[in-house]
Image (spheres, one colour):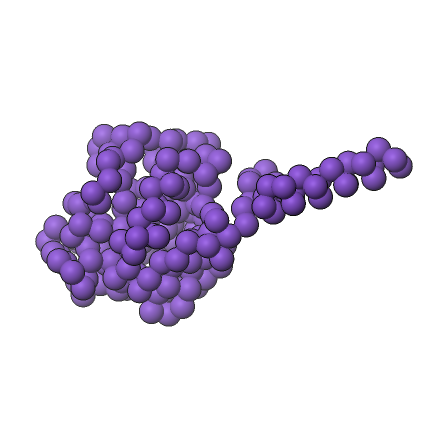
Length: 196
């Protein structure tokens, strides 16, 4: 019994020391610092970021979000039953320099990142980094899975998972299937906030 009490006390002390981090279902859950709140026209989407599997990608997303770079950026590619893609801060900002024909081809002023592939599967709500053919070309663009996509497993970097507001993601305007999901007059990210 003493050992159990000691273990519980130690776990509580560790949780206090680490700012509330704990293991839940095998994943590291963080207090506010690794929460991204994406405001859409239909309401908020809360994403739990995963620095334990993609530290460089998560850091870059957090820096871009804190600088307001994702605000007003279009969901330029949305494919029913697959995913909603956004994050082109170069050509996708619908209030400053939006170029519909180039949205999805840009990045940010920050460098491209080396791949941080993991064994975390692409399920509904998984957030992954978009990239070109080069696995080390992810920069600012990301996508939210609308349905499972096992064929992406180990091929793209997972950066997090939607933990609240998936119903708002489901309301994002769909793109044209004949045009690889490109969206005419797309929905946008209203704003992004780091922290809970």
